[in-house]
Each structure stands twice: as structure tokens, then as C-alpha cells.
Length: 288
Image 1 (cartoon, rainbow, N blue to C red):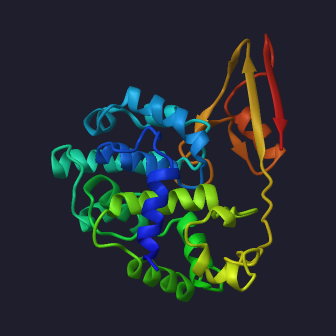
Image 2 (cartoon, rainbow, N blue to C red):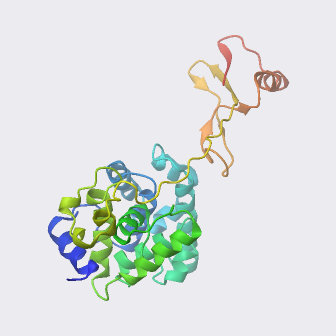
Image 3 (spheres, one colour):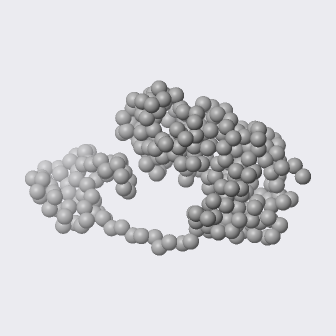
């Protein structure tokens, strides 16, 4: 039987995705796509990616922009720390590497917002280096193929998955193989209703052979969702609304929103201490 990597590579060339705007592009665009695709679907990312590279066509332009300009292009994409870290990393690349994206895995890994899998993805896709990736889709593919039980967030389970990711790497054609893994997880070995009949490695997939497709990978243990209560001050004057920029860390970091308080009384006290008056077109409202 041909290897896991060989079968995936053949499948990718015939049935994989070949029209994504960041494919066969430079390291900057590969890096940008990898950051945007964290916790976000491809269909959502594509228009954001295209607008972003139009405004920031290279790392130097991105580094020269303000954080507000960068976050404005990120608005609606969510997980805004990604945008802030992207901007910080661009400035580091300009200062340390002359605006050229570094090729060494260790240098990439030191940049803000980049972990082991993201650094490996840039190395494999942009520089054709032999590096293993392990994003969410790949974890699912490998957990099923190798029959690895346990939640991937547990250190021991994740280490097992990394060992398999390294062991299955081909010696050549790593970029195509890496794209094949991503495409498999996104289109065939999906979280629900996987298309096993179309899978190129179905014959030796342990989850399929042992009827555990619906139980692997092991779901994350459910946590109690915390509740947070806050009061916001809505201060309007004509068509103007008072907004303040939130701290760069914490929930909604770096975004603009109405002033936030622990309660309605605190909001009204702040309003009165500021010497404002809800008159002559002004309107004071609080909401939680």
C-alpha cells in the first residue's frame, strides 16, 4: 500500500482546493492567511484577506500603519488580538529582518501570535521546508486515522498527535502534502458527517475500521460558561456618541465602545463628576 502522504498528495492534486488567494504566494500572504484562518472559516476569511492585502500589500506598509488602521480592516473578523499581534510582528520583521519574512523556523516562532503549527505552516507552504503542522483540522484527521483517543488539548494527547504528524511527513513535496492535510480536514474529514467514502486513506483509517468516526477525536470537556455583567453609558449629543478605546489586553481589547462601569450608579456618578448635563439635545442612557 502506498504511504499516507502519497495518497493524500495524489488526492489533493486531483480534488483539493487550488483557487485560494493565498496559495502559491509569498511568506507574507501565507502568514496572513494562517493568522486569519485561526478559529475562522475560509469563506469568511477570503474577502477580509483580499481587502487587507490591497491596503497593506507588504510587510513594510503593514508595519508603517497605525494599530487603529489595522484593526479597522480586522473589524468583524473577531479575535482581535490576532490583528494586534500581526501588526507587532510586522514591525519586528522590519526592524530585525529588513522587512523580509524570516525563513528560519526558530525566528518565525519568536514573532508575536505565532505558535508551533503556524510557524511550521509558513515554513512548509512558503519555503517548502520539511515541517509538520497540527492545526484543528489536522488534529481531527490524525486522531481518526491513527485512532488516538482523548481530548487534543491534553498535553499527553497533543504530544501523541505531534509524533504522528512528524512520522507521516514525506521527504519531498511537503507544501502539497501540507495543503492536502488542510483540505482533507476542511472538505472530507469534517467534524460532522465526514465523507469517508471519498477519503483516500479510508482503507487503513482506524476510526472507520472500528466504527469510531463519530466519537473521534474526543470532544473537549464541557466547561461552565462564565457570565459577566456590566453597565455601559450611552452618551449622545445630536448624531455624536461618546466612545472610548479599551485597553489592548482583556476582552474586546483595543476596540472602541461606550464607557463601561460596574453598575448604573457608577455610570451616573461618573457622568455627574464630569460636569456633564443631559440637556439641550444631550441624552444619557445606561444599559447592561
